[in-house]
Length: 178
Image (cartoon, rainbow, N blue to C red; front, side, top):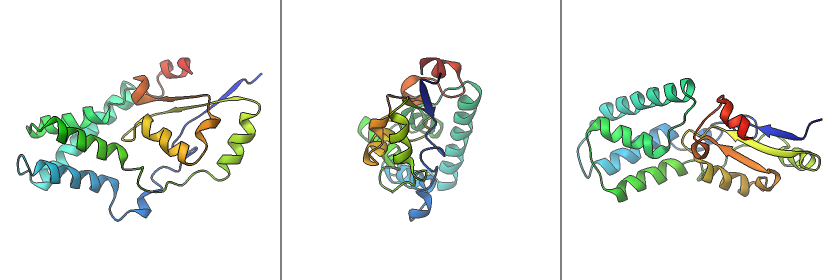
């Protein structure tokens, strides 16, 4: 007998990157702009070098995510970028960068799966519902805000986000926890 149903978030409940077409510039480009603006107060970094370092850290992140089932926090990623650039910045500016990176999806409307509200309402009457989701740039705290704004967060008995749990899919640890 089925007692619970778990969902992935991206491309199951929320259409991944559905906000991209609603933006003036891509999230990737916006992260570059954020870094250029803040780092200009410390050291002039050529745009090409910055983009290359971001790409290098993204490659390292993807390896850790796909091979070790770990998703680094945004703070970890930003710190790795700064380390490779050999730039030290204030804690205040570091927090500003991290907060802006983590909040990029809060400022634009995301598309959800068709009829998701009704579907979750119906399923919630018979089953416990949960989310098991990896987080790349948007942490669990902000994903909850997105789900709450859509008025579907209350349908879930639990949410396991990789940045909070410390392991990502397909690690058996996160599924055992669920």
